[in-house]
Length: 191
Image 1 (cartoon, rainbow, N blue to C red):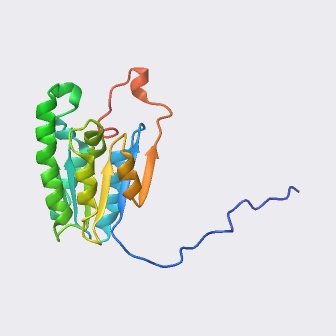
Image 2: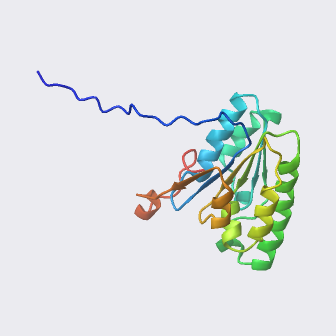
Image 3: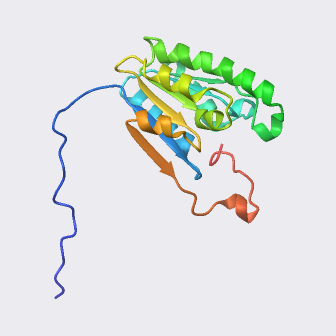
């Protein structure tokens, strides 16, 4: 008879205080799943009775399954796709900056409203990486968020300044991707 070795973790560090606060979450990295993880958190929040608002910086032209699904939640999940597509499609830096500023104005509106407990700024990390917005201004505004507001920031290349103020940072790492095998993005799986 083979003896089984217990490999389950038994030592678990317990937080000292049970502090409640609105969190800043950053989903970044070169792997897929940054926006998808934000949608998963949105679903969880809606399940707890929260209202969620998402502002999308880049995916404005795409008809995605997420946007269609969010419509089924009515006022509990609002999505605003204000971007005009990927930068390699627009090819106009000045226009991209203009759209990013307009989109950021919408983000600031949701950041400071009293209706939504969770706000998601989808692809904002790319916008900051490409210098469409001033990262110092974005960080300063995030620091002024209401104390119980949860904010999720997605996109690769999150600037160090965002990582520094975040409560939770997750980096998605690409191990393998179907695109590298010549497989196009699949509806219902990737968008």
